Amino acid sequence: MKKIAVAAFFLLCTSCVSTPPIPPELQYTQPTGDSSNLASISATIIDSKVPLVDNENSYVYAIDGKRVMVKKKDWALPIAVSAGARTITAGFEQGVYMAFAKVEASLVAGHKYQVRSSCDKHAIGNPYTYCDFWVVDSATDAAVSDIARGPVGGRPPPSVLYLPR
Image (spheres, helix red, strand yellow):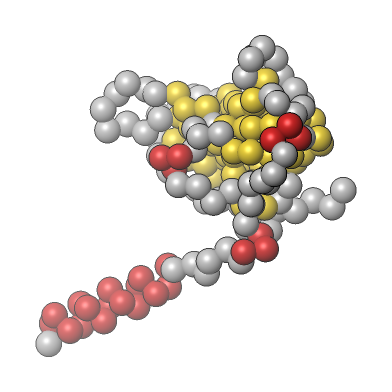
């Protein structure tokens, strides 16, 4: 009887935690076709070289309000994006600490870009309060966007991130 009660409790708890999938119309789809009109953008992964410690990862969470559906292990892979003015929702993650902000950038066809971040670090136990995000041209390391600041919290932003232009 005790095993059944434990199993029922486990099922109740896990069903409360599940989240609905992101609808296909809110998922980013990489453009195909003429590559001369495309740029690419990728994450910046800083390897701490400390075993069992999560890296400081800056990555692309969404492009023009559409959620980029890649697994964490693939964050550093380039994502194709149409050239022009883009709203990049950048994310930062290290362990349980997460931050997000929308960065406006004008991307040029044929160029490669990276999302970068800089987070304040101060106290053990709560090392971050905010992160600043920007986009750089990978070839020159020059910033191609302004800085956008996002507060550090413990969960991602809402799935609907579209900003009307």
